[in-house]
Length: 230
Ligand code: DX5
Ligand code: ZN
Image (cartoon, rainbow, N blue to C red; front, top):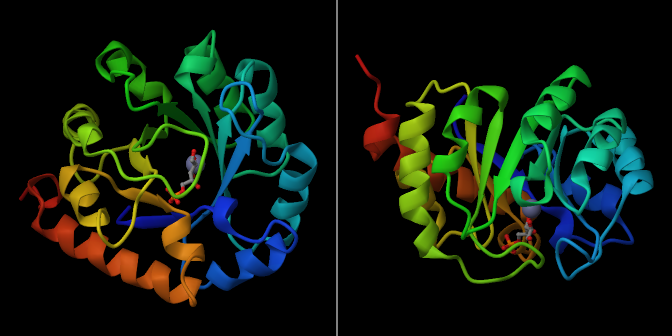
């Protein structure tokens, strides 16, 4: 896979999500759906009924990012709700290997997310169980926060762990990703880019997605990890 863009509807109009998903559908690869429970993070968004309905009306596959406690209990229901990818936080999971396997059994891509202060190294042996690793580039909970450059070294180490351009595990970044920061992320090893305010804060969200993709593709082409191996 090349560069993929997954706009976050956290910054969309919650009273008209179907229309806001349609605005990005021609340009984006996924629609990123942030589920927050006011326990794992200090914010509350949407849950299963809305995700089920979004899966029915969206032309894009749903990239569900669960920021919820007791995620081992709830994540499979999001797979059954029609998501294409379900990402759980390792800090919220009691049995991440079992959960990743369960998600795959439920027919979705299994993603695991790390908060900025969570190290990747303890999870190196789990990577084969995953389809995507999400490195948060802000503390999860809110849109519009400034990008944390301190995550970039972890992103480079994660890229080295998963392998080069044809790696089986996708590397996603989420938080503060914008025209200012996306090139740094791509250069360091990300290949799936979540952007909320940078897309929905724009007058033309579809064009914003195209601009972000072009920047990420340029930066990837120049990155050592993205160069053809021979
Ligand atoms: C934050 C969410 C993000 C959020 C990103 O916890 O996981 O997906 O929408 O928003 P921006 O792109 O505005 O930082
Ligand atoms: Zn998210």
